[in-house]
Image (cartoon, rainbow, N blue to C red):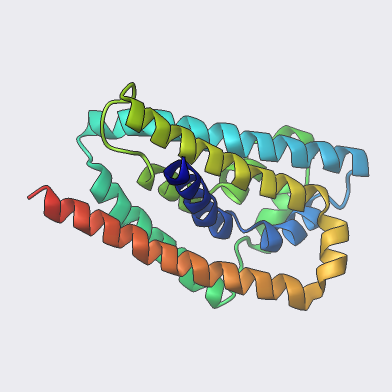
Length: 213
């Protein structure tokens, strides 16, 4: 059980910086400025739910698809870790995640865009996909240890999706309390943690490749 809790927390810590709810909450608030508070609350719930369903489905289906394509988990770990490192570097340098034209395109017919593009790729983009795939365990799904691994990662995904919902749902109040400085600080700390996790995932992938020789 301690291993289960560790893996769930590790998954959450890996996904939280790349989903980055503190930084994306102001974007969500800006995109939904033209809808009512009730619709905004509903959107936040839908996005949180879709984030969990999408990433969990990717976790279970992705492992099978990778095996079908002949791509090993260590290779995905290295590729995903490098992508996370790249994303974290841009976050540390405060690069914009969305352009102004992309924001304007999304602002029409908000309720029809809860999954695409508000969940994918605005919230759960390539970085989140890479993290999820890098956490797919080797082995057969029905083996008890492997199944337990899947369950722990799914719990971590649930925690990360809940964080997305909380920050989006209470984005206005949270941002007012944190202020621009607080939100920027959380974003920068998250980016640094993501940078370290990216290095760790790359190292795990390299170690897996070396052991497979």
